[in-house]
Every structure is written in C-alpha cells, then in structure tokens.
Image 1: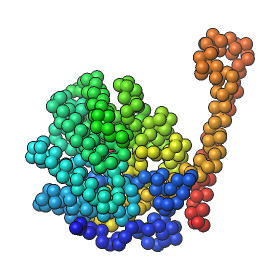
Image 2: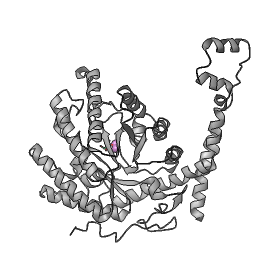
Image 3: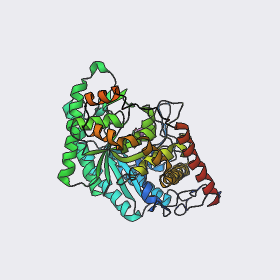
Image 4: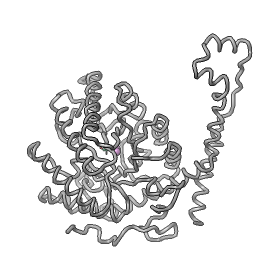
Length: 450
Ligand code: XLS
Ligand code: NI
Ligand code: NI
C-alpha cells in the first residue's frame, strides 16, 4: 500500500481551458488533441525529472532545504525513504497525467558503504520503480548515472587523471544502462558532469579527450552487447560545475563524435538553459541538431536573462519555444525523445502543490508553442521563403559547383567574362519576424475563441 502525498489533488489534472479559474487545470494541454495528425501527448512526450522534483530539498549554497518533502527528512531508514520518494513521485506523475519520468541512479538509490551494497541498493530500488511503473503506467524516457556528486568525481569521471575513477564510473554506467534497459527506457543520457577543467595548469587536454572518447566507445559497445534498443544521448553544457565543460554545445559535441567515429552511436539531449549559457539561443541548438540529424531529446527549462548560471526554471516563454518547436516539427518531431522537465522550483516555493503549478505552467507553455509551431509548418510561408532564398543552388550553376563540376578556373573565367554577375537580394528578416508574430498572435486569438 503506497502512501498518499498529494491528497489535495484528487485525480488526474483535467483540461480546463483558458477560461478556467482553477490553477490545477491545464489551460492548453489536451493529451488527445490532434496536431498535424498526431496526439499532443505523442508530440510532447512529457517527462518529470526525479532529481529536481523529488530528490532535492531546496537547499542552495547559502541555506538548507526549504521544501515540504517528508521522504527527505533526516533520520529515515535510507531504503524506506527511497521507497516513499518513489511513491510520491509516481503518485505525482500519474496525477499530472504525463507519460514519462527520468532518473539518475543516485536519485532513487543511496550510495552504500561498499560497492556491493551500492549495487544492491540500486537493484532493490529499480525493482521498486518497476512495480510503480506497472501500477501507474508511467514509462521511462531515460536513465542516467550520477558521475558528479561523489567526492571521487571532483576531477571528472572518464576524464579523471586516475584510471581507477574511470573504472568506477564505467561500472556505474554499466549498471544504470542495464537498469534502463530493464525498465524499458527509450534513451540513455550522458551529461558530462565534471568532464572539463577548473584550471589548465593541471590539465592535459589531449589525454582527457582520448579518455572521454574511450569511455563513450565502451558505453556504445555495451549497449549493443546487452541489446539495448534505446538511443544514447549526450547533453551539452558549456560550464558549471567546471569552468569549462568539454561537451560545450551541440556543434562541439558533434565534432567530437565525428572525430572519434562515434557520430552514428549518439544523439543530443538539448537543454534550453545550457543553450543560453553557451551563448546560443535554444532555437539555435535545436536547429543545429536537426540540421545534422543529431536531435534526440530535450531538457525543458529556462534561464534568467540577468544571471549567468543554470537556474533551471520552468519554461514560460511561448515566443521562444515556438521557434524551437517549429524546427523540431520541420525535422520530423521527437521520435524516441521527449520534453523532460529538468526544472526546479524556486526555493520559496515550498509547498508540495507548487510542483503541480510548475509543471502545469511548463506543459501548457510547450503545448501552446506546439500549436504555433504546427501552424507555421501548415501555413508553409516560412519554409517557402527559405527555399526560395536558395533557389539558385538548384539551377545549373549551383548544381555544377556542388557536384564538383566547376573548378576555380572555370568560375574565375565566367566571372571575368561578365557571365556571372550576382545582384544582392534582401534577406527580409523583419518580414519573417512579423510572420512569426502573426502566428503567435493568431494562436492567442484562436485559443480565446476555441
Ligand atoms: C545539469 C544537467 C543534468 C542532466 C542529467 O545541468 O542538466 O541535470 O540533465 O544528468
Ligand atoms: Ni539536463
Ligand atoms: Ni542543466
């Protein structure tokens, strides 16, 4: 018999629509609503993150936890507390009515006194999570290993100067990859925790790159050995906790994978706040991944424009997300991936009900962005204008250049003779921006009259 931690929410959060005055209803998100012929739930594939919402008590570097989370109280027997945490999480996710969750090994199972005890703890808690999944129908979007909290990982995991630390990290990933497979996870994520450096003075960059590549090859090999059918994902981040993280952004990770012949094995898990920390927009990171066939999944959150760190707030800007959503839809949508709320409540949002408010707002924001992105795809004007801009490349000159049929000499001759004489054309940026706004505003009007 599981405990009831969210009794103020009786059943599944219903759709209330824009006129609803009940904060515990969805204003836009309707799982069964068809968008471009596909259910909203299947487009968005929403996931709740175990760590922020259930394993964190709301502490920061200036103060202790503030959140009302009975399963995190001091003095509880660790495995009993772990089971209560899973009870709370699955009760919450089922009431929220979303299909997925994500976890790190350390979110659900405490480290033991020995490696054997740690392994046994993980096995017990993975079994318990499996029971909860069967009871509620909630599925696993991805699992991951926490390779950054324990002091042994202070100088990195795979990129640690000590090969014994590499070995511990490898054994941890092996176990979590197997647990992810056992729970039917559709992806496995590697976020580079502390794979980076704090000081170049004690860092051998070339050596650490070789170590990281070896590690990722081992993970891919093991995936095939055990027959895990999910997708391996790398989550880029430019800095924090280290001064410089090797998996800086999508393009850097992609280049690394290509360099080590691993691009066929991994895709990207793109986090909105990591994108902005790297000096890019979320839109850019998604567009880069789509353009290179590397989009895997998304960690949904947002940063704060005045802060330079990973504030992991719940997303609330429809304008920004609509552009990212448009790129995702152009690229064929998220297949195996989903939108995982790698987002945390503010420290003053202490009530357990605030977990509902954070997620409901984030989900409605994604749903509204989806409607706008879909409207832009259906309307087709943006795509048409983009295609027209490159029309010359489909003509004789463009195709001969790309197919290798023109040398520098040929081109120089034709330019010198005046045969080739390009005229600058407008990029129409303001026109395109106005078109986007028109879709955003039209969606707002439709939502009011729906
Ligand atoms: C930290 C990362 C982390 C990963 C999972 O900034 O976002 O939460 O998503 O290890
Ligand atoms: Ni993340
Ligand atoms: Ni993050």
